[in-house]
Length: 158
Image (tube, rainbow, N blue to C red; front, side, top):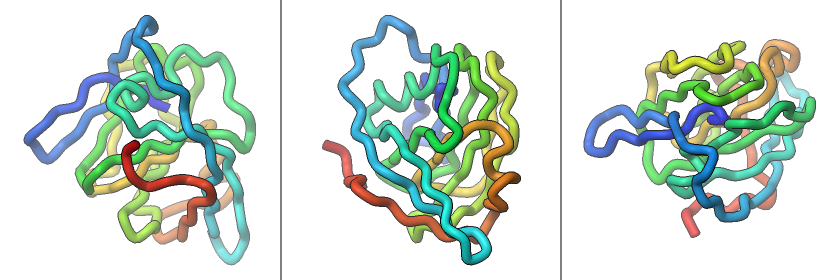
């Protein structure tokens, strides 16, 4: 959500950090789509806003007071890296679901505490990160290996 986070991205290193955007930054409208997760033969659909530009990624879900039960934000990155997020100016506790280029969950940060600059990562390269309400992943059995599909989401920067 970055909401979480968002903010600064390190360039040229192995890690990309999202966090620290400002409330005043100009935002372009966010694309919308659906992330479909398939844990244990079931299907879980999440209506998402898509963050793909640096400004959108830096802002994430900051300053939002609530997030719907089946809503989230999908962060799309141009390449695989170890992405990390913090929750500065994010009011909602989140689960961060890290997804690789082959559309499999590689790890989950559960119940990320809001309003901190503590960096969170799963320590592996990912291409996408899905942020949803805290406890969502456990409630739906989403963990490493869960398959993912996107509906109505372009996977490239505009």
